[in-house]
Length: 415
Image (cartoon, rainbow, N blue to C red; front, side, top):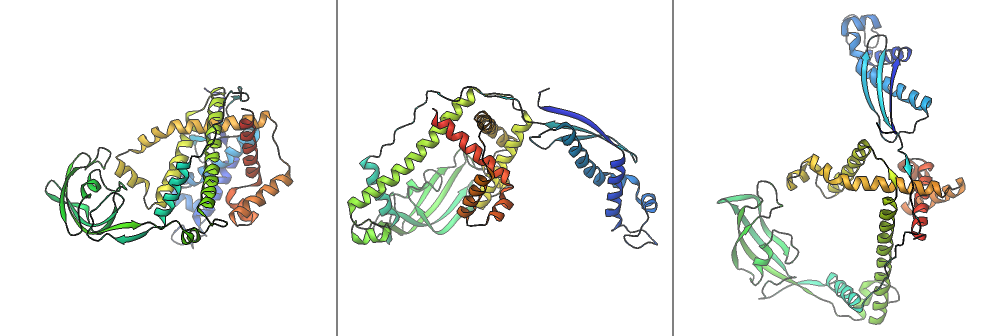
């Protein structure tokens, strides 16, 4: 058994009777017994009608909390995740609970300074600046009808289509006046490419195949699409002139040279952030390889579940749920869990590493410094400190976050 796994069996007697009484008071409020009003049923009559066992489930939940707090106080434990609890004995006089508690593992910090890593240099080419100006022009372009023009990559074809699989119309495989940007790869391979060269009013049959990574019942299947191009639209790029500079809304940009300087500064700033992030990742990876820590499977499982919850929230923002994701990708929950385990383990290693660096460097902050940081965070979100702490937790969490950030600064500054 790992050193940070603590097991203990607890027998509650007096506290168990109190939990039973508390549960009785709660349940008796809604109990219906002939001859008695709600909430007025004596305990002995209640037990005669419903049995003492009817109180066990709710009372056991209360007893678990009582016993858990008792263990933490007596043993001075700092649990990492929720404990597992087994009820090994239960009666009207006592309850016996067996706790398995995962505590902070033993961490041995290895070398984290002078790792011999070098940060990439930031360079911005003239082509990158010119490409960004072109992207701005495309973004600000007017979409106009391409009179008598053929569909080309970059155009938007307004199409009506119907799909057929095994000679039957494909459910959800049709659309009317659908604007499709050619080259966006929004549809299955071959669909957009098959429209290149067509003119408005022309119809074409596309014989395609669904890809390997499509939904289970359609992947690798042949599909036929009857597509009519209703209209072809293209971008009319703006000229680079005074009107273009005004529309951009950048202050102090009056000429093309001003715009190039502005864009070069923006790209440089973005690349510097990317380089810093990449260097931090390299430092974390190298220092973590020198770290000695034995991570429990339970901790990894907990982190994976947290990651899946985060992913489910991201899907929800896109109008999907995790069940639909499983259906579309053909992935099973246990497969997604397995896929996320390496990343979960890495996150946990990095967290223990940064905590160990903070301890080794004796990083700490005064209450005044924490208050200042909490105020800065609240101002950044446009809320009060009270609202921030309600959502964030406590000032200790703000302080923890400050210590972790400072530890990462030390890690990158010394390599």
